[in-house]
Image 1 (cartoon, rainbow, N blue to C red):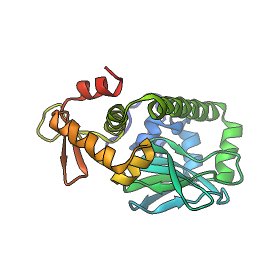
Image 2 (cartoon, rainbow, N blue to C red):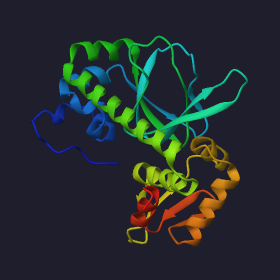
Image 3 (cartoon, rainbow, N blue to C red):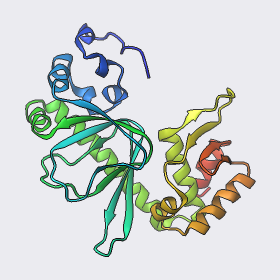
Image 4 (cartoon, rainbow, N blue to C red):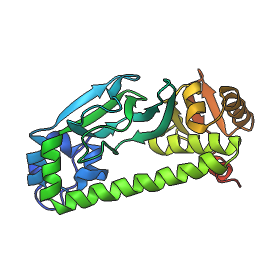
Length: 246
């Protein structure tokens, strides 16, 4: 992603260069901050790149910082006492990682793809929330949107068929990770951020069921799959209809 934000209030020239070209700045919580406030916050932030599969934070870690996802996707997991793992969510740019004003983390966060995040120290971030009502309001808006998304996903898990679940999962990825196919068509491509076992875990299905449904979608010419990882949506409208039970 490149290029400066449009000049709107005459202050953009004072915005830090890293913020000016950051998608999280345009669409995430930082959208609520003026250039002077961005300058103040950016003085204590840092960018981190995390490789696919690396853990960003563990469940019950002490909270010392928060982060915005700048690029990529992370998975949120809970670990049972006997060691079993459950994926409880996926997050994408420009979503916020963390639970402000908490002392301990409640989930483990792992990079589902190669990820870049912008990290905020806990003390400075919470100070900004207290002092800048628009910033706090923006965070609340984003949090409530994620809550709505989680409730919608509960419907997917609780009521949809296996075919509808897999279609819903692919629509979710296309909307958040998709890129237009280089052929110039309207086809959307992305790389699966989860292995088949993790997809099955996330959808409450068996690995065999996930594989059968992927094969069925491919035979119906809704998707194409290369190397079991690279997916191209061939007909987004039909896939969305299928995900919605039509």
